[in-house]
Length: 117
Image (cartoon, rainbow, N blue to C red; front, side):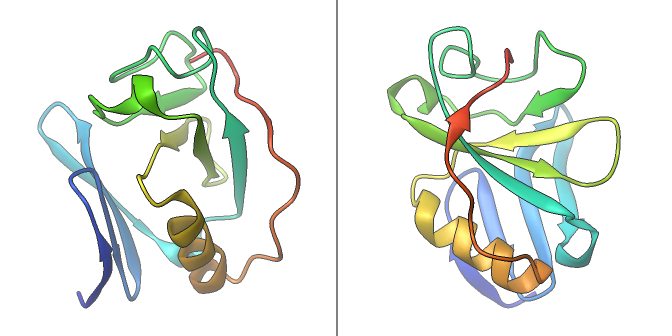
């Protein structure tokens, strides 16, 4: 996998987005072609910012990110499955652009309020 972006919790390769520290035992590797949507969300205390890992909402799952409380926005990835990964990369614009480009998605829509996570 050739890396185009790397940080502690996210690795963007040519064909796969690796969400590190997703499971207790490791990473989740998501082929870009399995991503059907990306939504930028604004974080608030009960809407993702205070969630270091896991979820209180069974429809979403946040990877481990100890710096999430200081972040203002994140991304929700729609994989066409019941559970949507919630990530908060440090370089949000760059990661969103890479994911949209490689998944063949259109331009970004407006930022919405995050769900309870």
